[in-house]
Length: 267
Image (tube, rainbow, N blue to C red; front, top):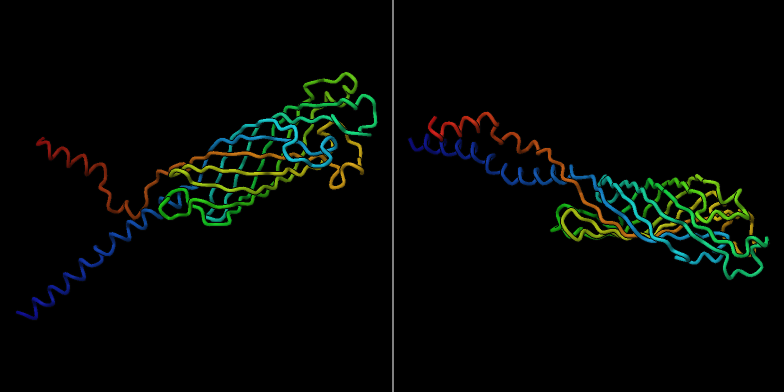
């Protein structure tokens, strides 16, 4: 009898033990499913855009800046790598004021331009530190980052419509570029990310300022026109509502819950 009672308790222990062990495992599995499925962020971006070219030969940052604004989408592959798309609208401006001996043509001496611009970036975003915008308790809320990708820009005609050079200033322009940026992002609130980034868009066109001449004296680094941006962004990590399979096995079906409510009501 004693031996029977002993084996009965041992069997009962082995039956109940997996159930107790499964509870914390389900909690971990639930968080992993929740965390791994939440990958897509959407947000807004804004900042200052400036031009570097023949009328900015010393590549002075933020010379003649103009505000820009747009939207972004980010897909987090894992904690160190994300894919991001930017779409923004801006005005790009510049002028030849104060430049000695250049430009050479008389009509260009007082030249200034302002062009509406629409640009798109497709970027790979490399985090220097593991980043997590879901569980802020993990202290993975901040990271420097490097971004690199390809971009496309469409520039409308000059809003000044200079009569002296209407052939050039009334033309639109489309070109591809290589955006390279460095910045940082911070999860200041659960699911909300604040980003700061300084980016250079290396273009392969010299017609942004309507002046496509080679100026060796004033443009020692490049003869194509570049575009720089300094901006901030705020994004939200979208919740993925599909529940984890670890919980589905233990979640009562809607039919069972309906029968249970009917049974409790006495009908």
